[in-house]
Image (cartoon, rainbow, N blue to C red; front, side):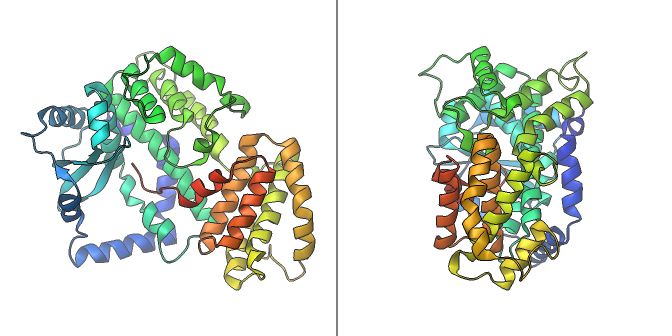
Length: 399
């Protein structure tokens, strides 16, 4: 099985579409000009902030890298680095001068065994193999020119599918579902493995109890994780279980089409499909999104031309009009919140809040007055204000 065949279909489709987007092309051209003037100093930065692990210093880690590179067909020279951190983390940095760089946190290398590290190594190599760094998501979402809300949503949607592809590459390297699940358990819990006896069946049962199919996470489930781009999510475990049961991982497994349909069904919970759906629930969500976006934009006392431009990029040309009664919309907001709270599941309500935050970030970065409105909407929907903060501050880099 060639590694390219493992890639998520949705990842590839969104990737090819985004590469053609004018804003993505513009940022890539800017990066290319910087590279033409001299490299971006990635290696120099790594050498000054991390420790390069030579083959003599970390023979086992290099052996794992060699095995993963062979299995995935990656032949670019590789440099491995470790940086001090209490969090379990790893990242693959875009190649420079013909070399690929992979970084690991010190705590991850100390807590993960060889099979678990192999999954992480394969995951990071997967990002390189599938050219995920050709979509400069961090540059676009954090750049001086704010992207439209639609582009921001497309980028975060693609990023989630990119993680699915990278997970498959990691699982293909590890060839050990137990180790893959154990590594995700460690990432989710922060435990090193010595405190709790890990059980794959019980871990998967916990995921099942979150009732993903019914869009109703179990009591106590970390629902905030479901709507961020990169933190651990039960969806990743479910998606990897589907992968392990498919013909990509075992002879006679389920078809690739069944796999992709299953993954898309899981991921649909995180997508703003309510913008097009023709149901009473979707209509209530759209009405709240529309009113919420207006009230957030008007939080400083006026709606600027730039905010109108962003609003119309999201809702369509001429969606904003001088005839809109802003004061009336402000008065109607509590009722629209109540309609969503009473008739929509919690994860679906969180979708609306997440999309309101995306709009606020796309405008110019939310100010305190706008943040207070977002907090108010979240609280009245029964959602923690920390969910707003997480989405305002979430990391947008691939890892």
